[in-house]
Length: 471
Ligand SMILES: Nc1ncnc2c1ncn2[C@@H]1O[C@H](COP(=O)(O)OP(=O)(O)OP(=O)(O)O)[C@@H](O)[C@H]1O
Ligand SMILES: [Mg+2]
Image 1 (tube, rainbow, N blue to C red):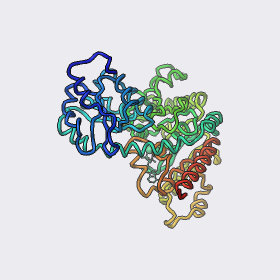
Image 2 (image 1 turned 90 degrees about the vertical axis):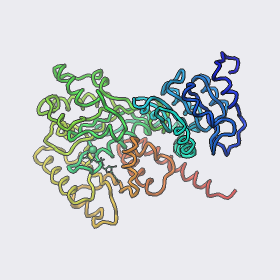
Image 3 (image 1 turned 120 degrees about the vertical axis):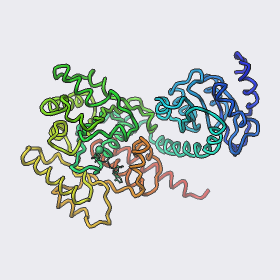
Image 4 (image 1 turned 60 degrees about the vertical axis):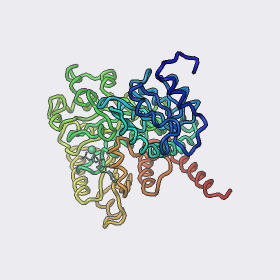
């Protein structure tokens, strides 16, 4: 590394920080920054400040990656202007260090790089300008950044205990039935929460290739829950393509409009085939009445979309809005194999869901067998017990999701990462109950998810057993 071409400014700094033998109590940092952004960090060399000390400065990405492998640093700070930078570099560093390094990315204020860096695994992003205040913030935040990484790693570790053989087996078995609509007549019952978390489990965990379609004509929120900006990847764009092509739809058109969320988002599995494709929803409520999505045109489009998607994916999950007279919703309810009737134990939710389902069956001639009652936000301390609900709804409870006392599902929405993507490791009792509910839902349609769930249980019991044992 020292044999390479030296630059006047950087090399002395580099030598100054060269210190591989730091005590573990200090958080060792590698910086890879252009000279102007590096200057404010110089005070952290030598004896460092507080818990933070810079151990080396890399001039470009190639050096940085070598330094990460060589120096046991806990934090890497790099700039989007560092030679060779790309989000992929962040991903590589996180992966190569087995998730042990907290990566902080600096860049120009505003812009896509922040989202891309976070998706690639960066634990923090700092917008320019970089000055003494930024460095103070960094020193203050550093221990928290490392804690966050440890937390992520804990989850990774627990998941890594699932054997490759079991994961491979999972990838072979189909989801049955394949097209599931998440629906309820009342806002806020949990349609999007179930659609997103179920899709995520089936792709990232149970290794199925699937498509999540946000067809909620009241306004799509899948993009928000997944921390994405849909741009041209929306159902309206595809519906317009369909209309422009004389109502024809093929896989090429569909692929152009879906966004592939890779497993980098969750790091549960590194299997490249476990990709989740997403077709985002409308971004403005008035788009629901636009020509490509409305009336007979909207109905024809949605039916063809479901048909095409069914042919090319192992499963399709539809986040379906409440109003059954809007064409995309009608098509989803008619053409799905299963309709998860997401119901909270609020009387209004139960009453309306039962009533509207009844008329879909009696007037719309929908098969009653395709409605599956998924009770969400369930609390067993209310006046409605399960038997009463089943009797009232005329359906057995198919899935039961307890209320998250800690509001962890909303927190997950707000961070743009599905709850299940960050809770596959060890959880407290509240989160574990919610996680198990989603796992059970996945297991109900996908046999391998049951095998994986059993193995997760076994490993976690083993882990707890080992922790409990006296040395
Ligand atoms: N079991 C639960 N416990 C606690 N909070 C929950 C639970 N399920 C969903 N939530 C939260 O309730 C809110 C509404 O959920 P969600 O957006 O999934 O409902 P929705 O039926 O899709 O609503 P809309 O009709 O507006 O699209 C979200 O903040 C979500 O995180
Ligand atoms: Mg919703």
